Length: 204
Image (cartoon, rainbow, N blue to C red; front, side, top):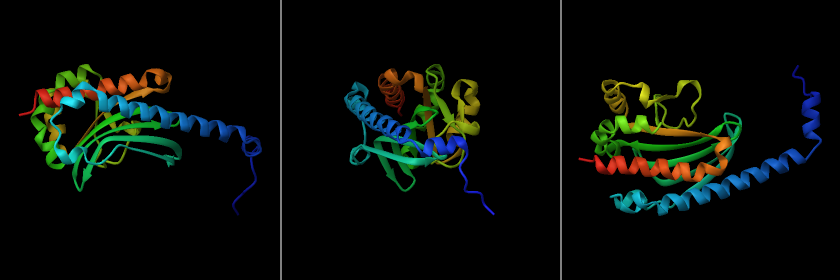
């Protein structure tokens, strides 16, 4: 028979509203911070100059939040956020409670194919800027746990070409520790700007 008795630690939490109220304040601050990130992304010179297809920017920015990503709260900003079937051009900035912030460029379908040569040619620059690549086959995994991501700097150019061609999507990401809270807006905007410059300057 299942035991529903609370442990001492569980009882202490259940009897106090302070923890939940504090958590709610943190989540509201994250939402506000990601709103600032959105404004920074939209104002970035590389964003203004990038040759986006019209449909890639039609969906407006979206901030989502939930409680159960790996049983923990999360908040996510999508901007740009173009998803249509297997087609994707999205930049996602996620806060994961107890872990980190992560920003991810998600390219899929013909969008990814259009930038294939630019991605391969940017191997050295991506590695030098500390980006990592997603190795799994599920595009909706967002975290760095369990070897999901590998630093691009640890992948040879020959293997990088294989990785970029492996699936019909590609995710390039960069994590930021929670201790970087006050710097995360500028760090995420800088990462986004770097990615757009590389895609634009090397596009065929």
